[in-house]
Length: 207
Ligand code: HEC
Image (cartoon, rainbow, N blue to C red):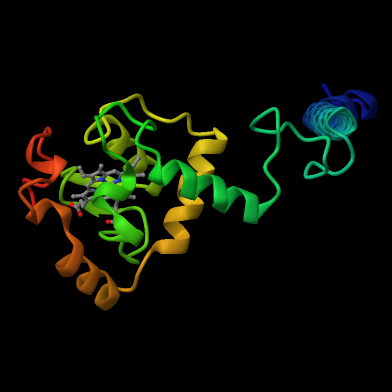
């Protein structure tokens, strides 16, 4: 008779248990290794984020240091060599240019020829649609439109003292709609025969 010995019985009975134990140990260790790996990867990621933050901060600090502490301080780049600071003088210069027949190349014509005392300058804010130009313009662009067309000369540089002076004169002489209409009716030079508008590229044709 063959009886299974205690040991062999134990052996055959413990086999699945051993297998289970080995498998679960393997599973747990795999999980452990995986979790450690993931945590360290995360740590690396956040470390590199921190490092990037640090670099960015350093770069900003360097930039600020290069610019001077206050970016709006006098150390900032001016738009022209000689800065314009005296408003009264600027207005005076604007008036001089406005009345200067040599400001443009159209004979005997100044801005004042068509805009005496600010005629045709109305207070609707820029940018706005200008009939004569057929499009929407800023005040600087409108100044240059009149420079190129009725004044028959080159456009003013956007950062020139002349541009600022003319813009200052325009701001001072711009009228409300009703005032503008009055001046327009009374003084529109394009209504008169002797007016340079009649001979020119006809800036008044759209009126
Ligand atoms: C030949 C006549 C003539 C001359 C010279 C002239 N302009 Fe004009 N300008 C006009 C007319 C006409 C208008 C109106 C355009 C419109 O509303 O369609 C106008 C409009 C303008 C406007 C816009 C006014 C507004 O509020 O709508 C500005 C700014 C202006 N001119 C600046 C100038 C300047 C600066 C000069 C001199 C450099 C100048 N003009 C010379 C005829 C002239």
